[in-house]
Image (tube, rainbow, N blue to C red; front, side, top):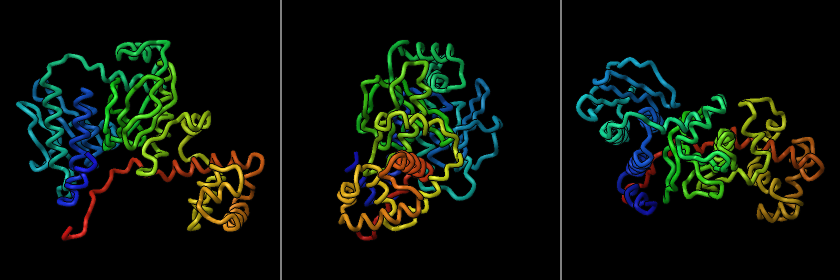
Length: 351
């Protein structure tokens, strides 16, 4: 698939993202997700509200790019931004401005997915239970009922895997899955056995193992792990690698005041800042940090003196290591771009 994407990108800069749209909806259809989740995927991919209308029974659903419901009132939409899914079913994108290169493929795949979804005539949709299972605010008894409905067994440990809708899945493991609304937008969530320490999806985050009543915690740690990804160097992150710290990061309020993070930001202003801090937090000594960064130990010594002067503490002494490691991870989370929709690959003319 990656080779195919590369070949097509050289012919059409927008084709690479178009194929990812196709792959995304293929995965969602295999997962048999509900209409709201399909709309959330389309809205996230297109960056605008996606809508659905059924004539019988009369129903309108509109979902914004963050996976939240908009008012269920069908607006006037330019015919260029809507498509009939089948008799009595219509989908659309509420685009302000000119049509974007991948709007057509998003509409086409959304219409196909909606047609398949409603053509099966199922009266119930148990996939919605995954959203309940992963919501800490839902009563624990209701979460356990949702787990049983999804085929999960109480007393057994599982992990949640999180990936953006545009993630590439060379292999797709089997397990309950759905598109779940989060404060970061719509996220593809998948539940796997505790023994699954890694997945092939890029990018992806694998949460800690918990029993079914605590899978909301696994979900939050998987989100943190996902946001720590840095493709192509780091395509998937396992929450277990960070021990109990991952739980603290998952439960920390967004934008909380953390002065050490501001100090790390000051170090990052140096051209060598990111490389140096990455090496220091992974090392036990100055010489090891120098080897990690691929620089002479005297160069690392000079950099470390600047780091200590900026931070106000030595990262190799006492709690300094913990302070820097925590601040460094929070800085990475606040500057994570892994959930940004990848831009089409442009190539020079003539290639």
